[in-house]
Image 1 (cartoon, rainbow, N blue to C red):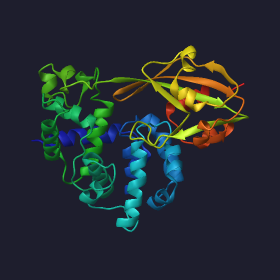
Image 2 (image 1 turned 90 degrees about the horizontal axis):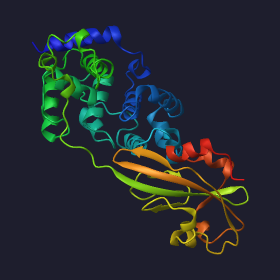
Image 3 (image 1 turned 135 degrees about the vertical axis):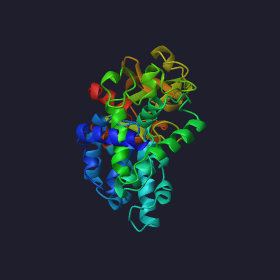
Image 4 (image 1 turned 120 degrees about the vertical axis):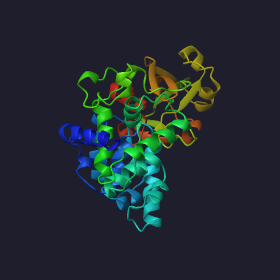
Length: 354
């Protein structure tokens, strides 16, 4: 009985699937790159990134031999930069532990940096047609509605329950096609809000539709606590050059570059800036400091965090000892460095300091 679900969804998929480049290959490396990009990124946004990334790093070997800063630069704008760092580490591991050949065993794929059960299953099934069910957010939604499962999907109990069910539904003859169909059905048809249930190919089998519960599923047990942070960036001009630093702490945007930063409990007005200890230490010995502009506050939303930022454009007459600890670079060369989308957006909006 359960195979009827697979038959119906795969039939729907074959008529409605999108033509995506990673679906036209069995290359495990390319499939892996696409899956990592799409973990937190919509397809229409991720497409160009995928194409640029595999053009520059077409093989595991090329990726492993690249400089991490360049890898992060190609990832710039996608966010969740730990994905790029893990890709880089995993590529090096494939070179050292698997002689440069992408592993074909699920357990070995799972052992790579940044790869969880979903990504391992995706690569194993799409590249090698192995019988591992892929359970992403789309599949959670489809299964929770089809079978009216009210177990909150953000719990360990749900993970086991949904994985077992997904594995039972998996077509042993063609797991790759089945997995693609399930994910595509959730992405295009069984959408989070206002799905067209009355025209759904599965409405006769969908328990949530029968019980008028579609809008209530899937359920989550808790809301993520969101914290606010306040960033005062110093965009400094000294003789046509500015200053950058690399974020090395275990924090957001690890290993990306940024302007000197003063983090505070709130955005600092200019009249309080000169009394700030970090500001005074940074510019100690500078004879003339001119505040050229203070940007409008910007809200940058990350998972679990809201970043409120302002960019303070400053011109200085001489270089302080404090600034010598930063990377001095010509203003017109900033684009060589991988920066957060927040800083990239600022640079796109602003001309050099005058």
